[in-house]
Structures are given as structure tokens and as C-alpha cells.
Length: 164
Image (cartoon, rainbow, N blue to C red; front, side, top):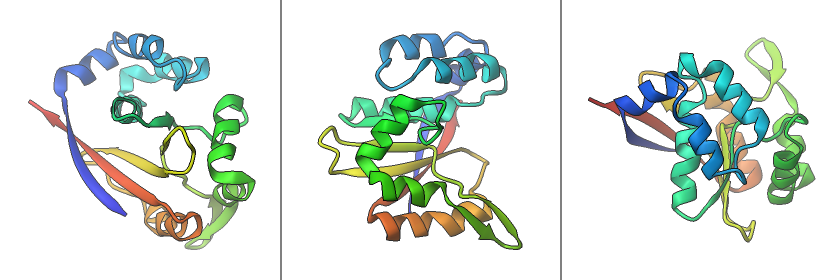
């Protein structure tokens, strides 16, 4: 796993929490975000939820990648699930969705927040976004190396740090 620290302006998160950002980002990047993504952001923005994932999806879009935001494996996001299946194959999607034992509990695998890929579908990697001081869960620390090995790709952990 590669760990990266990126910065964002504190005022941008404040604007997100006030509901002033996500609709603009949605209009600019409709091929990335669906209406369900927008609805989640609108209903949960006051907590700052989804900010990091949307921020990083847009970061990779500006670098020439395509990005599928959180819930890309959900049946409620059919377009994203179809695209994820094109990138990962049915076996890759099944691997990510399988229940696993972590410690003493059987639970759904904690797949990373973003699937990032080139339009040719040959280059892809995953991104897990954490706003500092958040950290990876024990399950993520166990599962992400399994993803790298099974799918022959990288999982990048991006820690977002606020600039004053």
C-alpha cells in the first residue's frame, strides 16, 4: 500500500458542510457522480461525509483518470457497477464483495472508497481516503494487501490534511 498526504483548504470543507459545493461538483462531473451520490452528499454534507471521496475523485479526474466513487459495487449504482465489472472482471467484483472473517467476526469486505482507472481499462488502482486524524481500520489493513495480491493492482491510502 502506498500512503500519500494531500492538502485541502479548510474553507472548502466548510463550504461542503454548508451544502455549497457538492451540487457544483456534480454538474461538472456527471459522468463520475450519479444522482444517488448527489442525494447522499446533500443529505449528509453537514457532517463532512463524502467530502474526501469527492475531492479525491475530482483530483484524479484532473489527472486524466476516470474514477468511480464510493458504492461503485452497489446494485443501487448500476452504471458504476457495470463499469467496475468492465475494469475488474466478474471475478474481481465477486472477490471484493465476498464476506470474510476478520478477527472473530464474519463481515463484508471493506473495499476502498474509489476505483480509479484509465479509459482503456488496463491501468487501475484503488484509493482509500482518510481525513487526518482518521486511520485505517484493522479490517482495511488486513484486506487491502489481499486486494493488491489478488487483483495485481495498488491500493493507495490518501490522508487529507486541512490547510489553515
